[in-house]
Length: 177
Length: 290
Image 1: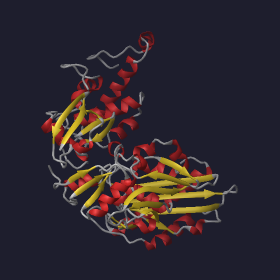
Image 2: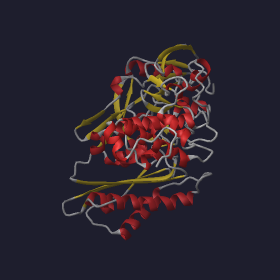
Image 3: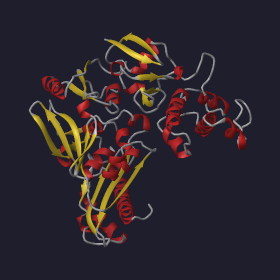
Image 4: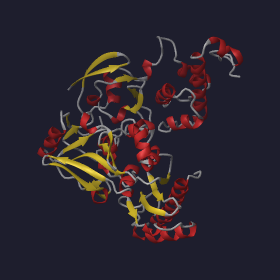
């Protein structure tokens, strides 16, 4: 059957079997291989995408069900080719990854959290990524990356004078203190 | 592709959905897919046809209907979690929802889907049994309701017949001034399948006497079970009395053993969590800190 999907702001069409998951369609038909196939039954979170801005498992839905939503994959986060989003940059800076397999899912789960909550507590962050498994045991730095990104996004949204007053915006690759 | 081949249809109305389901015994409802799709991936289920009801507008919504909070079957778990009306009217469900899967599965998983699949460790069926909710079922003959206690039969097994579709869950609202709730769960990891879960709701009168009490235990056996805690009513029980009552009431539980937990362990934990849930509910109703 033919499906028409809105992925990262573009309309893409694919000819798929009804049993083809959205994950497989993104990877195989649309060449968006940033969404990773891990357990393929909803446990690991590596395939997380955003559906109308909310994180969902792309292995737990079929491409046939995905028409009409705004789908965001990890490829859709960076503002321009060769650049990184604030969150992606924070993950690099704090070493919030090791093998990188869980990273796209972690970043998208965190992206949805930061869209909704500007000052997330540690508990909010842990809850938001609780459905994403990292087998390199990198959770500590992942949480740190999300805290750093939240802080930077808050400062971006502040008038420059108050942001500079007592807490200068962290430099992109500088010291955090 | 991991699932066996199937045909996918998206009916335009609930009547059409029921006709499709009645016409083909190998047809199955799909909604959020958070339980069904893993079963398809592992080929534990091999339906010939999936009838997708997820986008039927009449099945989505939270509505207060007298002393009942009716939640449409395809209402996503996250919608209930974020609904002020649901939190206020159904504090026990609000307390249990954060234990249901993870945020990404609650974004797509539905209330009706959780009920229709009847996983013995699932939290929404546990709350439905604890509060004696009614399950609304629609089929080509019309709409009927069934008490949750009759609806749930065993693991992944309900009273749903071919042609039936769960269309809403109707939770009774306790209108007393002082209502308290408690919820506890033990699992291998946060939000993983519960080995044991306990849900309690208590109402007190102005003098602090218990006027209504409910306790349910999930995860222990084939299905969630409501325990008889009517002995609490009319009194102000202390911890010893609660322990004794829960220990007696839990005799009706039939615990299963598996790789994760023995039947003995489940029984012990059921009593412990049942007591904790009730104690929390009493404290909550008294207005104290949890």
